[in-house]
Image (cartoon, rainbow over all chains, first blue to last red; front, side, top):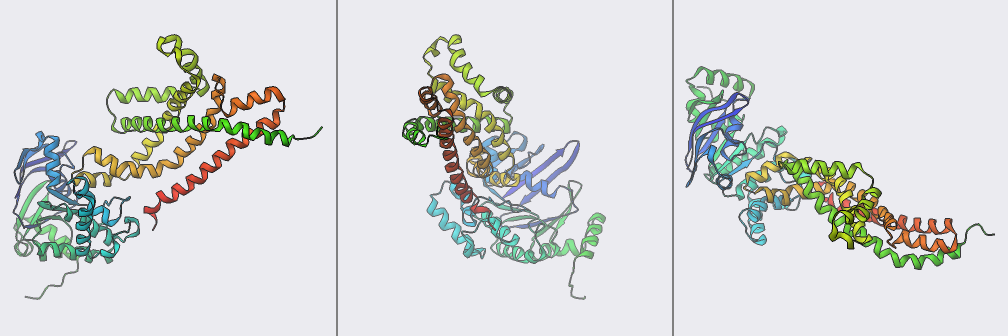
Length: 253
Length: 224
């Protein structure tokens, strides 16, 4: 289980995260939605210390720390128990698809190279890129790169995979293959915390949807409840705006 | 009187060949040491390590801001007066020392630029899977920075090979020193110096050929 309480992050004078409390059960799929600049990505980045939070408590498994006092070792532990999928893929440009996936196993988990490569091949098979094992990122499409990015996160065998707008940089033609892979992981009950603007993904896949605004969690609940009867006017307003711009095929009631 | 004494020039070739290894050794050792030192200086600059950063800036400023010849004289003639244990310093050591310090100052800046140029998101990706800063540098940043830095570093290496010729001013008999000695007996200045010039030229061209091969290999990952 992953739990944060009272998480605060300030940039300059503004609190981008203003006291976030969140608990994620094992196997749970949570989607975070909300307007741009409301701290959704910052929340993910604070969970594995890509940003240093200013206050709060973080629990991942038996790691339980005050984030402001986290030692170097605590931070490494937190990072090893979370995996991150980046908006712009952030693949290692000097390494092949296979090496990108195996890198963490070799360097961080100290697996022998053959074992790590065997595992990486299994993962490539699962993400449908077995034939691209020796391709470098520059020669892959955006969708393929992001699938390798997800494969790299899968290899880490983390308690949770954090997805930071994984389809936002993609050309429309590649979005679906990435979402399909994420759905496949969801079916396997991989614990996921996903920041996305893909409302259909939230509705179809999430166990819980969280609406954030102004650095706070405004409202949360199961997707059908949050999408069909949002309680807070801000949630209603936001959903109204985004759903109007996305093609939705609803069955008439 | 003939225009060019070709026989004299051909006769000079085997003589100069004997001194070629010393020239190459000074350049190779100087380059290896300069690379290590420059990497250290560049990392200090990138991480802005307090104290060391200021010292590094001063070091770079001095060794870029003064002529190599002056630095060589300073090491060879000047330092032994200041530090008694250096009385034994020979011309070869002083040359290597001068080349190392002088060129590392230049190289540090181009290595620093190459490190800073590596895509920041890859740094975050490496940290996100739990790499330490050291692993991040060795596995992700430096290999990519190398690719960017190689063309400029090879330029400095070429420069350094030619700069070894200054060693003759410290009494070292390398390619240039040997030519000087030969010419003192023959007075065939043009023949002697054009011969040694061709020596340097050929070395540099061989190196440029190697550089092209190396760059093709380093760019392998970036072909679409």
